[in-house]
Length: 347
Image 1 (cartoon, rainbow, N blue to C red):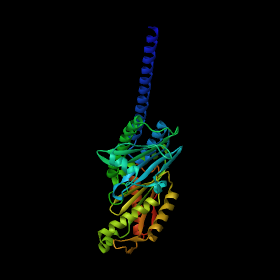
Image 2: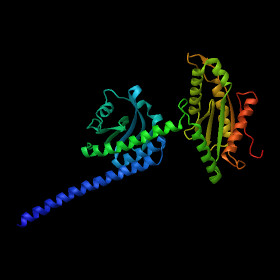
Image 3: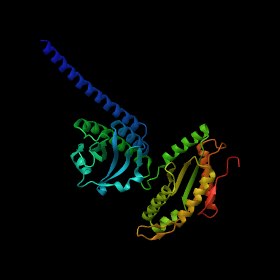
Image 4: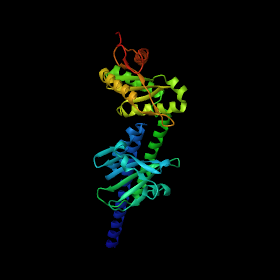
């Protein structure tokens, strides 16, 4: 009787122990999902959200490597947009060479099957997690080998699917946000976004003394250019002009299509001297750039630029914008293809 009782106690203990392990795993999973949810809800901009997600997921799952790929349907490939190797966080600009084909790869297989694909290796065990939102494939999350090198389990696959659903939401939210704040033609931020960022920069300047400058651009004689070469060529020039601005500025700088052929840049933590130097470089770069039209013809484009710096004499964001606009029109009055600096408040 005692042996039976001991056996039953041992069995009950083992059952409770298994249940406790399952509950602990479920708590860990829910904690991971909560952290990812907080990271996603913190920002609509993918460049801010992706590093947070990569850090949280890699840390929670103790991964050797994590990478998130976006699906480029028209090109039939997947392009990495963030990766985490050990302690090294790598963003999209350093990952271009790791673009993967969709066809004939585990990336395409997990998308087509719409399920987590587990592979034992070599070289390491890996999980390919499809990222779907509202039945649309957005990309794949690659999770490579926990540091123990143990294969992933079916329980892991369930967690990965739940994580993938949240990552997909972040990608979709970013796409919707981009449509709302980016100009469809140039890819620059829209005027509404510019107004909000200028208001925020002005408030930061007043409250914390954070310096910023701004540039306003106008493509010289653009109406005449459109009349001569046609609106399709004009649109191409606007796209190439916007690309020049993006290539010549920092990630923290805010490049916007202000209206028509006018562009604007907000330069955080930038004094007048540096802003003026950048404007002069851009003016020269635009003048020397080989713009092309719809037929590949070479086109000559120049720009007038106004520069203004935040200062105590400005009472509202509209004041500094007006000063920069006045400087722009001074550049146009003085012959175009040049830079003019706004008068300082009270100057």
